[in-house]
Length: 247
Image (cartoon, rainbow, N blue to C red; front, side, top):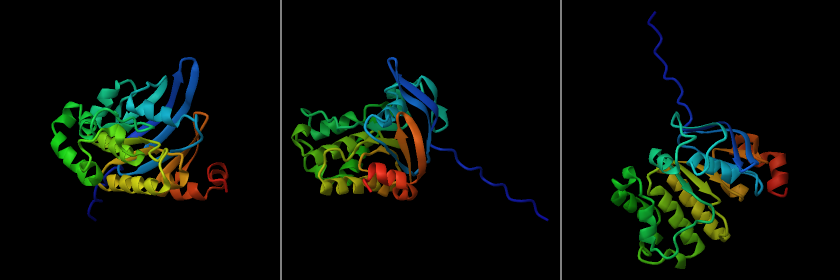
C-alpha cells in the first residue's frame, strides 16, 4: 500500500483580529473584537452609527493602536506599527467621506496614493491600472478633485487607495451621500477590484448593497461583534432584517 499523499495545510486568514480593545482617552470603543478576512474575500461590517466599525478600520490601518489584543496581517503582528508601515506591508485605507484633496488635480490625488517605496516603484503601471478601472477619471486627470461629483470623488478615493497596490483594501462607507444609481456603479467597481485580486473589508450603512457583494459579514454593536455569518445568512436573519432593513 503506497503512503498517503501529503496534504497542504489550510492557509490562515490574510487579516485576523484577536480580542482587540481600543480606547479614545478614557472611553473604551472596542471590546474584544475578533474577526477574520481570508484572501480573496469581501467582508462587510454592519451596525449603527457609533458602533465601532470605523474604529476597527483605524486599528487595522495603524491610525489607532490597540490597547489589548492583536491585529495580524499575513501572519505578522502589526498592532503597534505606524500607519505608513502598515501601508507598506499591503493595507490601504479609504476613509469615510472620501477626503480627496480638493485643490489638487485628480492626477495629483492619485499620485499621493503611491507614497511608499514599494508603490513608487510601480506608480506608472498602477496609474494605468486605475484609469482602466475608472475610465471617467482619465477624462478628468487635470481637473481639481473638489470640482468633481460625489461619485467621481469616491472613484478618486478608491483609485488613490489602490495606487498603494494593497493586498487588503479597507473601505469606509463607500456609498455615503451618493445617489442610488451611483451607488450601484461604485459597488460594481468594488466587485471588479476583487476580481483583480484585492481582498476587501468594508464598512457600509447600506446593508443590502454591502452584503450583496460580500462573502461574509459581521454585525457590530457597542464596540463588540454580536453576530457573524455568510452574507446570505445575515441578509435573511430576522434580527438583521428588523434592525437594519426595517422589515
